[in-house]
Image 1 (cartoon, one colour):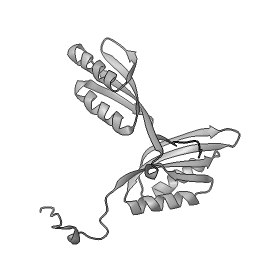
Image 2: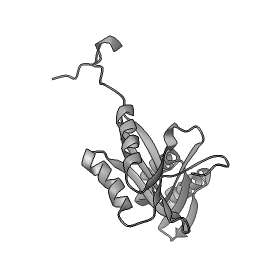
Image 3: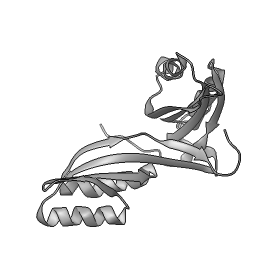
Image 4: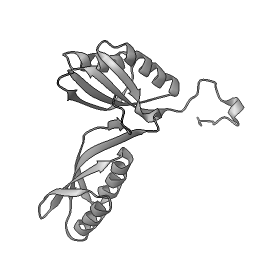
Length: 182
């Protein structure tokens, strides 16, 4: 059986929409159970979390920042955002993906096996991507790289044929340009 594509846009079902990635930054009360409630919202509705980072941001105000990356149609992402606003202890929700002032970055540690020509090539590529060697042996490197997730993905694509051994990523962090805070 072949998968037939619609002959034109008029033949498409009205509910066919393209999935996209969204990054939500949440300012929450730093108290027990907040993360559980946020993650539970995703689990209960069958939404996948692609990246999750959490850290306290203000001890005096007892607030933490949660950054969640997920995928869905625009309708689903709008539903997620609306539901996040209703979670107890969530003070603010910001869709960083839709914000032209949004900045997203990630950190990764990348272990690469390397000897001879591959070793030289790994160092050359790391220099181009501004990845810093944080550990080196005669047979391997551990590089630290930060930047947009797409930059890290491209770095990994080039390191795989050279001997990528292991990878650890922090998950996406986000912030808004300008003088205003969340």
